[in-house]
Length: 368
Image (tube, rainbow, N blue to C red; front, side, top):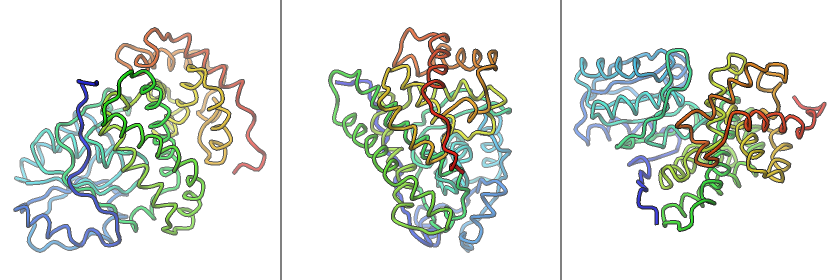
């Protein structure tokens, strides 16, 4: 059995419905919370403000973050919350902002309420924060002892989110299966919680491959449909359950290590987190020799417009130095790729990238 397993299932309270924020002040008062710090960005507050109710009995302070979840920014939030004597933090935004709220809340012992404005990661669900430096390069991830108190999804907010972020969320969430399943295959005796995480990972794959393209089309039309809600909740909830119940045994592996290597390459900075991870899935599958999975995914990636080739990520085979750097950073000590391939080298990763380039057919002329 997996004696090192630590389960953090998710927020204490979750709701996804129209006007869900209208009941927020009553819940805060019931918990004797009188002062709240609201962390936001310009765009996140712009799309949230029409749905954010006026508070009569809870004092609000507002903190505009600088765009990165960094150690310096976490310290700024904690200091500001202490100066305002805040009892709780409300994080409104995408993955980096929600990670910032979780880190600051856990550092200062405050309750955490999360309101996602994007469905691009499981950040709203999982008690984990990815830490970057001030330039946006990956540093580490921190696992928190405490999950968020509340997670509130307002459909009207997410209907205003950019299509690219839902697409990236699909890429990131597909990795829950391809990384998680590869890790589970190495476990001889699986606990009940790992089995639950494995089921959730499979559910991520099945929902996204079935409904992903339809959901993107629905969001383009700004229609809240069953397919769109399924994909959004898969990206946030089901995806979060994988790591919550599976812990390090299903959390990340090769695809995220490839992502981490890519963050240092300037040419890839136009890609969102989940887009980099999606490309990393394909590289991991080459390393595993799972070519039938690659054959299945390539047309789906094309339909979803996820990156499949070097040109999609801003590189070519002529970028030798960049590819070497990307490969080297993806296999540095401590990277999760070693959970799958303990003796993996930068040369093997570089060769896998070259192999993927050969395996991938040109994009369809009808691709948008």
